[in-house]
Amino acid sequence: MTDADPSSEVLLEAVIASLEDDKAEDIVKIDLRGRSEMADYMVICSGRSSRQVAAISEKLMDRLKTAFGRLSKIEGKETGDWVLIDTADVIVHVFRPEVREFYQLEKMWLPADQQRSAKA
Image (cartoon, rainbow, N blue to C red; front, top):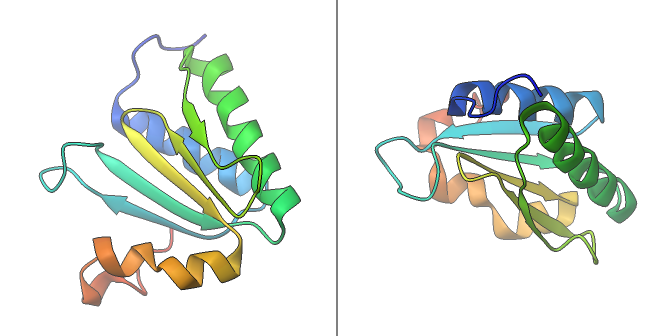
Protein backbone atom coordinates (compact mmCIF):
# COMPACT_ATOMS: atom_id res chain seq x y z
CA MET A 1 0.00 0.00 0.00
CA THR A 2 1.55 3.29 -1.11
CA ASP A 3 -0.87 5.92 0.17
CA ALA A 4 -3.82 5.31 2.49
CA ASP A 5 -5.70 8.42 1.38
CA PRO A 6 -4.52 9.48 -2.08
CA SER A 7 -5.58 12.80 -3.58
CA SER A 8 -8.14 12.63 -6.35
CA GLU A 9 -5.37 13.57 -8.82
CA VAL A 10 -3.20 10.62 -7.71
CA LEU A 11 -6.20 8.33 -7.95
CA LEU A 12 -7.02 9.69 -11.41
CA GLU A 13 -3.46 8.98 -12.59
CA ALA A 14 -3.70 5.41 -11.27
CA VAL A 15 -7.06 4.91 -12.99
CA ILE A 16 -5.75 6.20 -16.34
CA ALA A 17 -2.59 4.04 -16.07
CA SER A 18 -4.66 0.93 -15.33
CA LEU A 19 -7.00 1.60 -18.25
CA GLU A 20 -4.08 2.18 -20.61
CA ASP A 21 -2.35 -1.02 -19.39
CA ASP A 22 -5.48 -3.00 -20.21
CA LYS A 23 -5.84 -1.44 -23.67
CA ALA A 24 -9.01 0.53 -22.98
CA GLU A 25 -9.90 2.70 -25.95
CA ASP A 26 -10.92 6.35 -26.31
CA ILE A 27 -10.15 7.30 -22.70
CA VAL A 28 -11.72 10.63 -21.76
CA LYS A 29 -11.23 12.35 -18.42
CA ILE A 30 -13.67 15.00 -17.23
CA ASP A 31 -12.95 17.44 -14.40
CA LEU A 32 -16.06 17.65 -12.21
CA ARG A 33 -14.57 19.83 -9.46
CA GLY A 34 -16.94 22.69 -8.76
CA ARG A 35 -19.57 21.17 -11.06
CA SER A 36 -20.73 18.13 -9.12
CA GLU A 37 -20.70 16.85 -5.57
CA MET A 38 -20.51 13.18 -6.62
CA ALA A 39 -16.79 13.10 -7.51
CA ASP A 40 -13.82 15.20 -8.56
CA TYR A 41 -13.31 13.39 -11.87
CA MET A 42 -15.15 11.17 -14.30
CA VAL A 43 -13.35 8.84 -16.69
CA ILE A 44 -15.08 7.28 -19.69
CA CYS A 45 -13.54 4.60 -21.88
CA SER A 46 -14.40 1.67 -24.11
CA GLY A 47 -13.52 -1.98 -24.32
CA ARG A 48 -13.89 -3.92 -27.57
CA SER A 49 -16.14 -6.65 -26.12
CA SER A 50 -18.20 -7.47 -23.05
CA ARG A 51 -15.38 -9.72 -21.88
CA GLN A 52 -12.78 -6.93 -22.18
CA VAL A 53 -15.09 -4.41 -20.45
CA ALA A 54 -15.49 -6.79 -17.49
CA ALA A 55 -11.74 -7.55 -17.39
CA ILE A 56 -10.74 -3.85 -17.52
CA SER A 57 -13.14 -3.14 -14.64
CA GLU A 58 -12.01 -6.06 -12.51
CA LYS A 59 -8.30 -5.25 -12.96
CA LEU A 60 -8.91 -1.58 -12.12
CA MET A 61 -10.65 -2.51 -8.87
CA ASP A 62 -7.87 -4.95 -7.95
CA ARG A 63 -5.14 -2.39 -8.65
CA LEU A 64 -6.85 0.34 -6.60
CA LYS A 65 -7.32 -2.07 -3.70
CA THR A 66 -3.68 -3.19 -3.85
CA ALA A 67 -2.14 0.27 -4.32
CA PHE A 68 -4.38 2.34 -2.04
CA GLY A 69 -6.51 -0.06 -0.01
CA ARG A 70 -9.42 1.56 -1.83
CA LEU A 71 -12.55 -0.55 -2.08
CA SER A 72 -14.67 0.54 -5.01
CA LYS A 73 -18.33 -0.01 -5.72
CA ILE A 74 -19.08 -1.67 -9.05
CA GLU A 75 -22.25 -2.07 -11.08
CA GLY A 76 -22.92 -3.76 -14.41
CA LYS A 77 -20.02 -6.21 -14.50
CA GLU A 78 -22.35 -9.18 -15.03
CA THR A 79 -23.46 -8.03 -18.50
CA GLY A 80 -20.29 -6.22 -19.52
CA ASP A 81 -22.08 -3.60 -21.62
CA TRP A 82 -21.57 -0.67 -19.24
CA VAL A 83 -19.65 -1.02 -16.01
CA LEU A 84 -19.59 1.78 -13.46
CA ILE A 85 -16.79 1.85 -10.89
CA ASP A 86 -17.24 4.34 -8.06
CA THR A 87 -13.99 5.06 -6.20
CA ALA A 88 -15.59 8.05 -4.41
CA ASP A 89 -13.17 10.63 -5.91
CA VAL A 90 -13.18 9.25 -9.47
CA ILE A 91 -16.17 7.73 -11.24
CA VAL A 92 -15.19 5.38 -14.07
CA HIS A 93 -17.50 4.25 -16.88
CA VAL A 94 -16.31 1.38 -19.08
CA PHE A 95 -18.51 0.78 -22.12
CA ARG A 96 -18.78 -1.39 -25.15
CA PRO A 97 -18.53 1.10 -28.07
CA GLU A 98 -22.18 0.75 -29.18
CA VAL A 99 -23.49 1.34 -25.67
CA ARG A 100 -21.19 4.32 -25.19
CA GLU A 101 -22.42 5.83 -28.44
CA PHE A 102 -26.03 5.34 -27.36
CA TYR A 103 -25.69 7.07 -23.97
CA GLN A 104 -23.16 9.76 -25.01
CA LEU A 105 -22.11 10.72 -21.48
CA GLU A 106 -19.36 12.96 -22.82
CA LYS A 107 -21.99 15.23 -24.38
CA MET A 108 -23.74 15.58 -21.02
CA TRP A 109 -20.60 16.45 -19.05
CA LEU A 110 -18.17 18.15 -21.43
CA PRO A 111 -18.56 21.60 -22.99
CA ALA A 112 -18.86 21.30 -26.78
CA ASP A 113 -15.39 22.79 -27.40
CA GLN A 114 -13.76 20.10 -25.23
CA GLN A 115 -15.57 17.01 -26.51
CA ARG A 116 -12.96 16.07 -29.12
CA SER A 117 -9.90 17.31 -27.22
CA ALA A 118 -10.67 15.41 -23.98
CA LYS A 119 -8.74 12.26 -24.80
CA ALA A 120 -6.41 11.40 -21.89
